[in-house]
Image 1 (cartoon, rainbow, N blue to C red):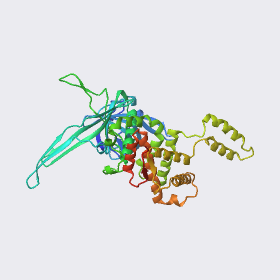
Image 2: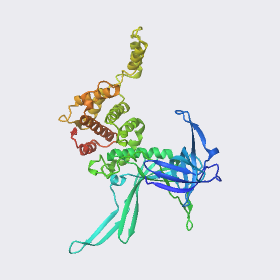
Image 3: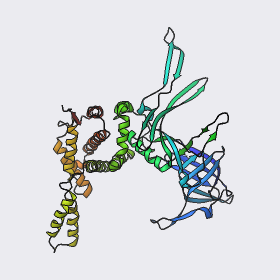
Image 4: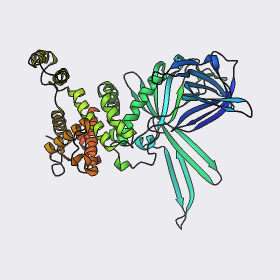
Length: 477
């Protein structure tokens, strides 16, 4: 997001006459800090930190009016320190702020609701790949440009009706002109609109889920650059005709992924763009959101490796192997018998354990046997690879023997999980990097299938992104 800084007067919602001068600073990678020249004393709630045993001073809402006359709401504010300006006998109180809303006062947390919220993500323009800007150039006989004409026709908005909300992709045009320079930029937005005003937290969950889908397609971390919302209570009546104007409320917060790589993107290395899936876009979105609850552990484990590029290679390996295991468990379950049938077997196995063994040993056996009817990691990996084969995607035998790959992945997982003696394979950086990459490619293929794309398209997208030739492809007749 953009940086933001302002000075103004600040107060608690229940003490509007107790205004204090201060400065608000927001940096995308560091968050927001409010510095005040006094203390709100009686209006700060005291909450005990269970870890340290100390009390922290926090408040849900602080209201402000900046030097430009704009209303500001600060949400989730925590007191983090104080220092004295001895020469002026002034206390400077510092608050950490989670969310900034510029343009409107929300008196309490429950009031922070929106009818619609729009977001521009990093690399969203490139992912959508649609522009309304056209350039015409006239050249002289010597080949030099003598006339440049720019035309802008806004592209048609892309609208999708999902189960609980409407998603719209649209565009804004910004231009700067002086006698020596012309800058024109089209900015893409994803807008979410609901029938009724809903909490900001609800919108955040939606946009975080969209952010994950875009990161999957881009194979690169994306995050919000601009976020704006409309509240039904914040409007102006038109003077010359009937109607209302709902101004945007600007929203600032430190978004997940802000610390990652912000360089330009190579479209030849992405998994898919909007243009690749445009015909199936609505179906893909419905599947992505409808399966979120089932696939949440997979999303969390897989995307954690993207949002934290500094993660140790061994931790990436563990995240991805757990994501694969969780994927099969969540989508296909995988048990040798039903839970009801296994209860009978479990009781009999417990009865067969000798009575004179160590109690800790007995507890360990009981814990192991409790889930012994569930598939092992090796079996789940075999079944995942079989699912890919049924959809025309095969492990390339000249790169990896399928059974050897599964054995290696399981062996390394056990070593890293139980801290057994580490094999040479686990220490080999190049080999571990290959294991991590092939698991990423397998998870990508699985998630493409879960989006509901046709087999032929999934094969084309996986083939396009398979730069290391991990796979062979053959669509069954």
